[in-house]
Image (cartoon, rainbow, N blue to C red):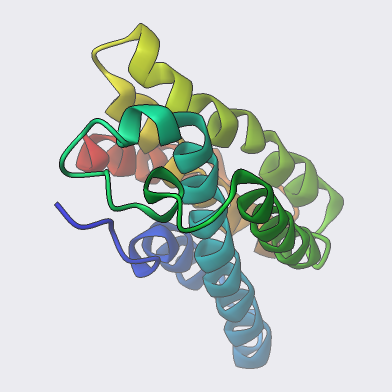
Length: 166
């Protein structure tokens, strides 16, 4: 199966931003959607790099993954770390455009980003952790607009996204 395009990462956050944006100017809403779209793109890239760094030795032995750039030796781990750093810097730039609550909430997702590749080694349900990671932005959508997560809307959206990922 091909990796999901970054638009799937934007979907839950985008829907929540749009839903909670009543009474907010269209320019502010468009700006938030652009920030979340950029964040989804670069954090998806960061997550893939982390995954490929952790799994490069395993990926060499699996038909489906042996042609990935790190597993195939096309890119060195050092260059991958540099590109990871670039993705994280852009992600940090996006995150710092949000309020402090959203910055803390967004930064806390990095634990899941780093943990997901390891979950394949300790559980038969790594997709559950992937779902928790991919859909974290659903929690950020309302906090970016309102200053705090609107849990009655964000939590069901987040959990449904996790189930969809499974």
